Amino acid sequence: MDLKDKIALVTGGNSGLGKATAKLLIQEGAVAIITGRDHNKTQEVAEEIGAIPFKCDVTNDNEINALYTFISEEYGKLDILINNAGIGKRRELTALTREDMKEIYEVNVFGAAMVAQGAAKIFKKQQSGDIVNIASTASLKGYPTGSIYCSSKFALRGMTQCWQGELRRDNIRVIQVNPSEVPTAFGDEENREERPLEDNKLRPLEIAHTIVSTLKMDNRGYIPEVNVHATNPF
Image (tube, rainbow, N blue to C red):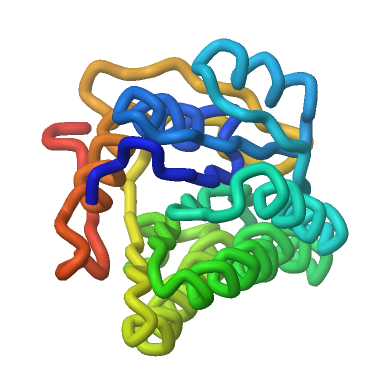
């Protein structure tokens, strides 16, 4: 797909993977709408990279509806959803709580589903569109203290496969990208600080290149799932 003049929505687009992906999409000629809970930060990043900012908390259905109303009124179409908004929390089984589970699932599972639903309604009318779900290698294998985060990404992987089955006949490609560890603003809402890049670890840029490369494949084909690992992170 030629990305020039395509309209792309990037949730969680004001930092890390989302910001890098939006920036690369813009460099390819696309219009990128980036969302985030912190509107001031989202506006600053949008000005920096040339994106369109929109305040949207993916746990709030009214804000999701407002987002899609804005897209419909302003652009009349949508071509790409990068379903990137996500948070994480580590807990041992003996310490986790129902509230911990709900906090992460509201964003990583329920939020992802509701944002994708809005995009899918547009895509089905158009008979075209791409959904890229940003998951994690944690969607493939669990690890100690990962009960909450890993299970949320396992759920996203299951939803991705369901949407692939539902939407292919409408010419909608659903792609899952699984980064391994990337230094970024990962954590719960009380601890979301950008971590410094490391020479032997993945950068957001590697993931952005992966996403854009999958989108640029001719629409007659798609990559259902791709894993991205650092070559030598040890």
